[in-house]
Length: 343
Image 1 (tube, rainbow, N blue to C red):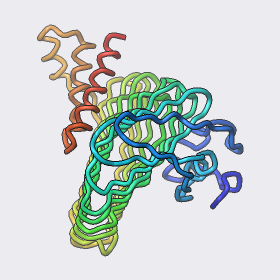
Image 2: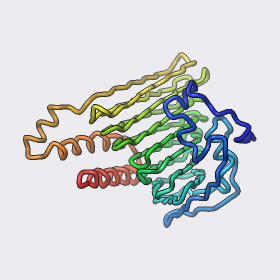
Image 3: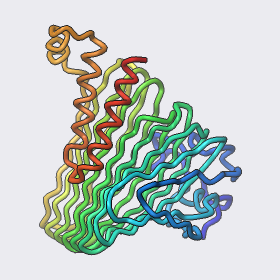
């Protein structure tokens, strides 16, 4: 296993770290390994078993660093539906959750706390003929830095969907990687980002089709206000043996302020010749006709804008098959936007 102090710090010429340099999300000096405590992981709905930490693939600097600081793995018993809460306080905390689903499960993971730095590793396998739905809700403090690393595998005839609601944290870097390793595997991924203040939210998503007759769908909606910045990059790879693959990725950005920014970079590498692969990206300011219509009905400009933003972001999760995950994500989003409106 590669040691962090022996690893080369990536430059901004590397695609993964172009918009968010590793030095900006490291919990200290970039040439050091500071002390990182374990985040508190609790659930009233699932059995959580602690085991010795199993190393993440040493494919990038963030995974190498987490290999150094993580001490244990929380193995989630994937059956039924419910919630998992991860809380972090102090200077730096980290947690690793591993999901192994062989039946059907719907799980919502809540991140909260005021840790200066929060490292999260999520790994899992959706076994043959199983169905797993996972929702991740980021409600960290507005001063927190989040580094999130995902590694997922979807096996034959399995259905996996993962949704992310990103509202908290000051600077967020997420590297979410999924592999479809079995025939007729299906992946759906939904991401909603609410940019406000000076939030910096960088999502890098890799989806790799390794077998034929697989499907994937990626949707990222980002609403950016104030001086916030959202980045979405999607790397879709279809191997030469993955014939009859159906894959698409869509990035949509709603710019609410002249100072807000949004990047959308879909990428496709298609090596098979009998596939359907599509991508799209769009960025635009708020529709003035919609705004005028709502204000003519008595809403203030702030209230009308909030309603449009809510509809735009809620739409991110309409494709979720799990009622539990969809309703949880939409409820937390509505509460968050109402708090923003009152504040």
